[in-house]
Image (cartoon, rainbow, N blue to C red; front, side, top):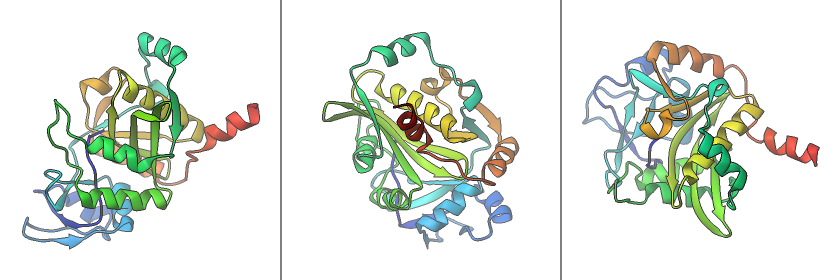
Amino acid sequence: MKTAHIGRGLLRSKGDNCTNCKESCGKVPSMTDDSSFMEITPQILLRAYACGIFPMAESADDPSMFWIEPELRGIIPLDAFHIPKRMRRTMRTTPFQIRVDTDFGGVMDACAEAAPDRPTTWINPQIHMLYRELFDMGHCHSVEVWDGERLVGGLYGVSLGRAFFGESMFSRERDTSKMALIHLVERLNAGGFTLLDTQFITDHLKQFGTIEIPKEEYHALLDHAMHTRADFYALDKETEDEA
């Protein structure tokens, strides 16, 4: 997962990152050099995710975007998710409340904020607009951690088929992004998801069992996940039934 933001705007290629998408998803725009630009839509972005690529901007001020297709892809195996002992205790005793999809825009804004260790992000105004449209279409979701009425942590990502593509996370209090991730995995398992794509691997994610796999292996998992559709809200239905 990154810490940035994306929307409708101009898209350009970045080196050879588009080669696979040209073979497997012919409807996704592909450019041959950095001087080529094309408008993207939510529908085009979903096709890109379905063939294993995603866009980024150089910075929050850059109006254009480029395709990324890592040779090594970060994923969290949902059946091998590891919760550190301290975080298990935190989840049991925290006074914070976890909500879903109540303030998607607020989560994106928080992910795009500058921080001491991150003076700028890849989330530009176009990215923000595009992912809000995906949210309105039911293909983007946010997991939010609240302290009363104050948003203190969370994450957002794209849901397609039985795959969830983590985009970005943030913390305003200790461990709140980790809390959001733990809840996300519980929700994905309840809903029948088979792939949690973190795009890249970080020390923050390694403690939860994140691994890197080759592009070819990732595409096999992705293709399998595209065949049927998972239910992001199944966990809520289970809770209602228990009540």
